[in-house]
Image (cartoon, rainbow, N blue to C red; front, top):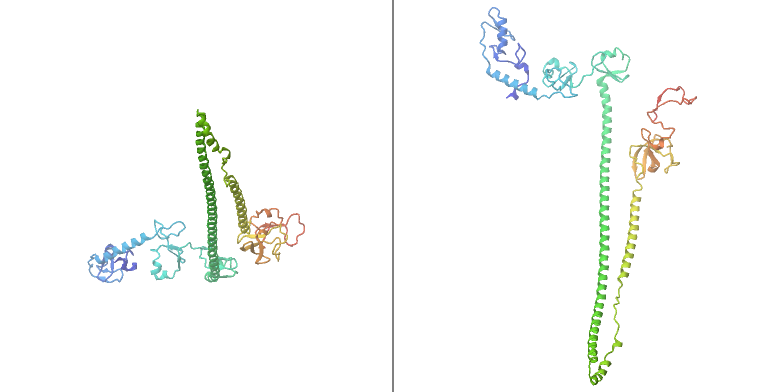
Length: 472
């Protein structure tokens, strides 16, 4: 119900104390007052036993009964609660914020400032400017410090175009009497139009720069992806190359093992044959030993021919292990292959690294970026792309960099093309090593004067006075 109560205090104010009704009573004419206020009024102004209404002056011959209006009292209670909630919801003024000039105690944040009253109001105290007819004509602005003329303590309402400053009406009759002056609103409108145009241009530049940034982000991301793919491809190629070498190495190892097996099989056969011959010879040796131990001469002579004729010891073949493959030679071959592979890989990889370095050789050795002030190095006699209107002392601003080329706007020539390696950055402090010994190391904004050693100047009217360089 509190939300439905009108915020017009006049409707619920006592016309005697001008405050919200307390213990409201309504007299027969229909007007309501605080019980204490109407009692005090009638007790003080009791003339001839006639009681009058303070508002409509209606007369009562007898004192009307003063009964408390419960409905109106309930409305007043809720209205006060609403007012307290509204006041508590208002925030305190922080550092740098404007405080209400009417709030006592806590510094409540102001929401409006009146140019006529020259004070600031919080949400509660600004309400009369919305309700009181005389105050409605005042001009309210967002809460701020109201600037006034330091000399006349009046509002600054006029703009002096001659002195380019705001002045009050009294200043027009004083220091700015014959100056070109206009109302501040007219000057504001004109400058606002120019400022709006500037804002549009700035927005257009921001949009263009945002597009450049977006494209740059895409280019950087693409470049990064390209580098990642190159790394992954390099890992894959070298991994496959290592696998190939490992595979071929395994083939060589298997071949060596096969040759070893063939030679060992041959050796095993020779061992078996030689062992068999040794066994047969041992048997024959046993027979000969038995014959030599025979005591019977006749038996010895009878067996001698058979034993001696079957000896065949002179015709026995000689055995030796002679492998077809020399593993020492294979070891030498592998070492030679490893040396050739190492040399080839080192040379080819070095060539690849050199080519990669060549691809990045176009990167400027000097960190020149767009927006830097640059000039041609003193050591460059003739630039690659010719001087044009540019001289050795020209200083321009870099507008574009593409590879090893840059575009510079010089005062003498716009969109001049140069090679990055032929340019040097010019700092505002003139700290470049190339400019330390430059006798013409004077930049825009420096204070200069004619040297004391110069007796005749090319410019008349200038002696030893300090002047400021304004040439771009």
